[in-house]
Image (cartoon, rainbow, N blue to C red; front, side, top):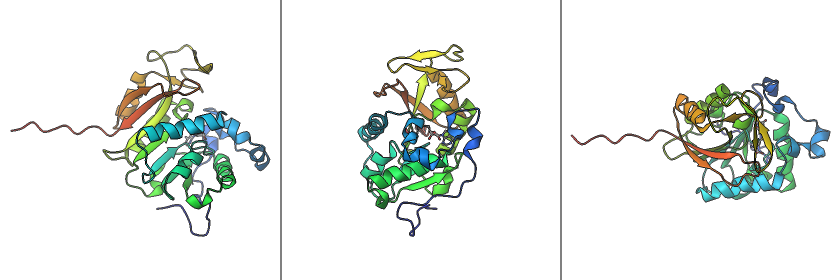
Length: 253
Ligand SMILES: C[S@@+](CC[C@H](N)C(=O)[O-])C[C@H]1O[C@@H](n2cnc3c(N)ncnc32)[C@H](O)[C@@H]1O
């Protein structure tokens, strides 16, 4: 099901199935911004600031990985479209899909799109908090991205996200996601990451994980993961690439 409707050139959204309140006690994204807060640009800060830098970085990174205008892209936890505005401008109309648990951030994203005259690109946006990726009716996305999302989630929530993503991926799909890296598993002490000075924690927002822990999550969800590492993120988030498991070649008889 394509969630765009003809009567809304700016792209329509699914009715909310769940609310951002699920994230209360997990991360800061339970709080819906008011229209006045959006008008004053507070959505840009809520998603982490560095609006231009991190927006462009996502676009340039995915283009370097082969994202082309005809591809489909699913932006998991797209927020206020910091990366989305660049992807939507680059991709052919209707090829961008984004969803987020926080409806006010999606509203802010629509405003950002309007200011750039990009409503006509007809992005597909959905509001849900349970990683229901089937709402878009796409069998397999070419690219998926989750920038600065796993950094705000518990392990079981990440596994849910990965399992949902696995259901909308094929052997060609590439799912890039960022994380704050811990040097070893069950790394209990807080970590100060440089450059950027971000402070992360084992069991509260903002979260860090070891690559081994990310591998366990990927396997639990039926995916494999490769370490991409440094991709120029100003707060030292590292990049991962999830793919469906490689098929084993049958040994000749
Ligand atoms: C740091 S912001 C990053 C937003 C966007 N990816 C970007 O780079 O600007 C994290 C985003 O994850 C979203 N998020 C957090 N938990 C979520 C969940 N369970 N399902 C969907 N989105 C979620 C938040 O609402 C927020 O928009």
